[in-house]
Image (cartoon, rainbow, N blue to C red; front, side, top):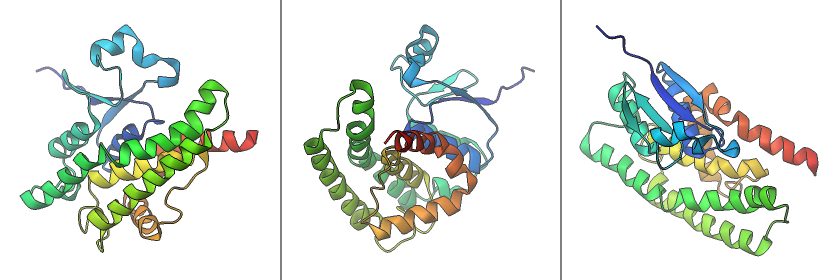
Length: 228
């Protein structure tokens, strides 16, 4: 009988969805092999990686020849296949639909709006050597603030987590995205105490896995602060 290999994940922890996958694997102790793909070095554009994912993006999951290339699908596959608590992606149709509702909304709201702040404040200045475009940054922060208000009213409401009483994969995707501007020493939840409390609950629920996943981002923040 052929020996099954551990599931392999290809990650760069400066990537928000990669951190969500990393946290899920870590806090649920799912056996796996993590392989680093450094985007800043172009390792995602090598022939070997391009063969695995022609889109040249991370994360990627490979499970004995089965390949997935989208973080939402990877998270839900891991929860469905491995013996993890059901609350991560509930089986009950209405509760599962709430998770699917947020993760669909996330891709055109939380993700691009939080990422834009990081791109304008950290990535573009680092790549070009130019100062931050303050006008564009203010506009991006305003757009993100609108998104955060919708997160509070449409999803969080009076419940502990985005989709109910328990943490789900939706919370992981959201919190990792909203942590990204921390790389520029910016807490985008500073004026949103309800979301700050939600973030603290997510951190408590996943334990040390949270800071392990974000260590690279914290290091980026500290390097930038040291240069100021």
